[in-house]
Image 1 (cartoon, rainbow, N blue to C red):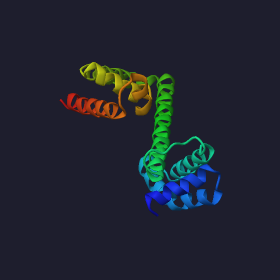
Image 2: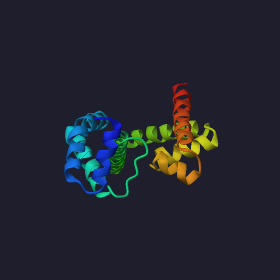
Image 3: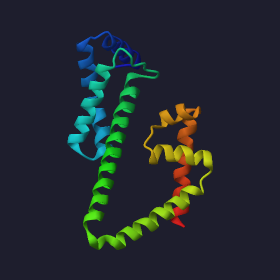
Length: 177
């Protein structure tokens, strides 16, 4: 199916055409599953990511505005869902680790190592240029999407992406020394 056919199909979906929705689902479910599975490394979560993405599309069909193509929109949506799952998973893991620290009296040395590592990481972050550091911290520490950062800071999405990439590159360099 050509991108123009996909756009026509999505136009039908916007008007509530369930057959068009099923056609779109059947066409992209495998591609989206592969992307989700690569991100999440979990078959159940990958299937859930695809289903939740399509549920979201159906529920928001009247308000969704697609700038490029339905395929690109769906790929981006499933990736965002996966990244949110990973953030939640990491937050849960950190919470579990903090609980384990409090319960286990033998992890004092691990706490000290953790504090030293956190201090080293913070020192490395502090060497990053302030505007770049702001985007990095908003994205990785506060968990804000790059699109939201661009809106909040009044800069382009590409600038935010470049700043986050640059910050990661600088961190890798600083921490490998």
